Length: 70
Image (tube, rainbow, N blue to C red; front, side, top):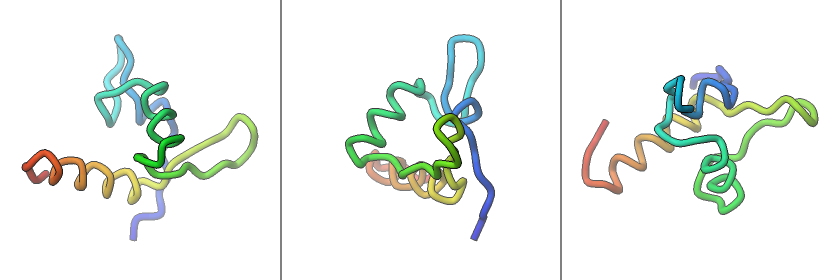
């Protein structure tokens, strides 16, 4: 299992920088709150990260729900 972590700046896309996911940080946080995206690991009030294995599993499941595999 991959134990690496990814921070929001690598995860979310902005107008000038593509991220791992084609969505902004506000969308990711809304999905976390609704239980549709994996829970992050909190290191402090200002440091949050996600397990890369959890994010990859989310991407795979999202592809399957749309009828494609990645």
